[in-house]
Length: 407
Image (cartoon, rainbow, N blue to C red; front, top):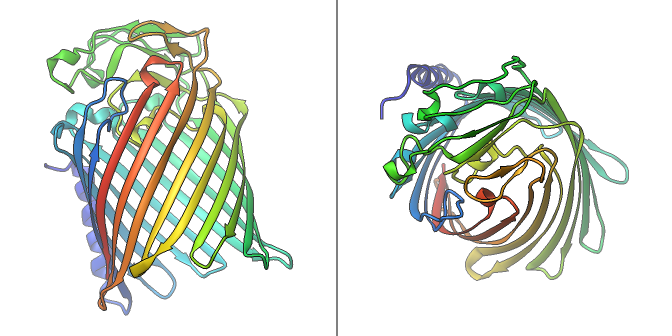
């Protein structure tokens, strides 16, 4: 795969930084990991398609007395759908003194041409400050993000996040953690386009765009029978845009209680509440074939009110192994997105409601190899998204085995 010129520039810049850094007294950190996954529905469809997925990651970090520079990248390969292979990478700089940490990074996802609709980048800066108060611990974090979408400039945005986290430990080996996040998103483009009927965007035959002058619905043939995941298969037969919202703000309140039951067993319960404060998210509905985090690209976590209840059971096992079991239940009530009553019929007068539930299990073994740290991990996860919208009603199981080596 030949990388685009701008990616080559980023890679060369990263190598140059490391070469210059090598002239000074500093510390290197290398990381290599490989994960092999079987997923019976990696694209989270009502009509499931299974695949083996191999994810390979490499990381380089150079530590100086006052700052570190790091580059990380991973390549994901699908055994059954090679056109879906993609590369993600990140170049960052920062520092952590214990009570104060700061940093900035640029990350990018690169897909093959036929799936460039998922190409996106994020440029971010963050600051975290820890305070040791007489009765509890307080952590304040702020971050700014510039998110860009190659094929959907209307979704480009600036996001500001502010979070306060409070924690208190007791002699009963109980820890209470609570916090509040305030998030604000401003969409950059506010062009007043009433209607567009064209070809060429991601290989579509026909599409409609809705803007501040009204909503648009389009029916177009995605040509899904061209091949299993062909270049004209991004959308369902009916897709729907809502681009009239200029900004959105959100508050997230959470509370976590962790209890050590025995010397080797711990249990944590967590509750989170999501509430929109103003505005509403833009969205593109009806995009199919989204793998894992891809669903968040066009399913904005700031687009709904909801509540999440989760638990985590941790058990230390013989031979230095650890097992974690984590069930969850997440109710999401979307504020402006309609539903698909079937494969084609979109109803904008009924709002989408999801009940996202499941459980995960992870078994991990850490090994000190003398010249580095090796970890082996086995994961299983079950997901059931129960939605009143046809294209978001799915189940998924995956099993993975991976190792991570740092030296």
